[in-house]
Amino acid sequence: MVKIVIVGVEGSVNLGFILRLAMNFDVEDIVLVNPQQIDWDEVKRFSAKAHPLIERLSIKNSFNEAFSPDELKVCTSAIISEEDFLRQSITIDEYRRLLIEREGRVALVFGRESTGLTREELKQCDVVLTIPTSSKYPALNLSHAVAILLYETYVTLGKAYREPGRRPVLASSQDIQGIKDDISKLVSCIAMDENKRERLTRSIINIISRGNPRKAEARALSFVLKRILRRMNCN
Amino acid sequence: MVKIVIVGVEGSVNLGFILRLAMNFDVEDIVLVNPQQIDWDEVKRFSAKAHPLIERLSIKNSFNEAFSPDELKVCTSAIISEEDFLRQSITIDEYRRLLIEREGRVALVFGRESTGLTREELKQCDVVLTIPTSSKYPALNLSHAVAILLYETYVTLGKAYREPGRRPVLASSQDIQGIKDDISKLVSCIAMDENKRERLTRSIINIISRGNPRKAEARALSFVLKRILRRMNCN
Image (cartoon, rainbow over all chains, first blue to last red; front, side, top):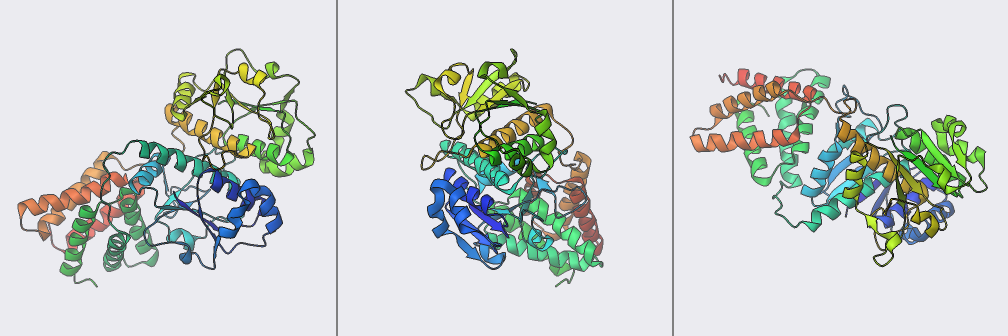
């Protein structure tokens, strides 16, 4: 099952509820990045029968330390924006597909109750996911957002594993990193303006991340990118 | 959208969260049957921006009064039992189908935090639904069960009715065709062998097709491709 990463959590009630939900949905890998002023007695109370999970929490000082190399980082954002290249949400169907193809090797990342994830944090995500809600009042409470995505994940993986069909061989995170680096180099050789470079790079990486490349496809793409870089004398 | 019916609610935090969730998912029809010792200030606090819904709650003294004749009564139960004829849960897929076929005319019924719905109440339901959870700790907190089913309902009905608002603006098939043509040109300038060209082109197009590019992303990718083609004198 997936990992959950909670960044800068501010509420003890929320944290307690999140532990309970983790046990409800068989999640054992819970990382807190810089939790704020937590009242652990309250956490214990609201976690109910899941309180033993408190002992098993992994607490980290920085965003990067929360992840293993092989996980798809799915970051949640309450705000969706067509103009903002960092907030291009995948759809729920895309999330379901990625989850199945990745066989559940996904880290679900949730931001602060007050301000969500920072732009620096969002930049380090593979994909961004906004839970569909009413435009009248889109902001979900943190623990309810966690409930919804753990449920979605549990049901989707549960279904997937009942049908043992064939699964594609995916590119490794190293393969993907190499591709990202090459794209970033390439865009640097083409665009002058820093903002524009970032927008172009991120747009292309968005498409590729959602495309969930297979090993052989990643190899082909990497081959083409390296040829282009060489032909353009771009390094 | 659906109605929610909360029977004998005991917790003010839960009730506040439920009102917030109702607004998050566009539910306006909320019925409380015999609420217990509610602290309305606490309800208001946890409902956040949804507090105006407090004024619009409908409060009833008996289970029967909560329903209109036209609604399918979907009652939730934390306990699933193969032997108990009152606790034969429908599956999530069955719920989705019923919801669509009923065009959302469904009342979602939630029982007490402590003891759920009574057997007398369950007997009056049309179907019983148990949210799939881990057998290690199946009991969801009330407001999280509400979150999950309102989300499930919202997404299922949203898909069925194809609300245009929350969908990403996708690239047109013309945009995509332009990108495919450019990739094919580019690969022709790089690889010699016909078979290899075809394999490379197809691999990259596969990734992009699965990536389901948004309009703005396709524009960025197209810009980069055209620049590369020009720099490589490739036509």
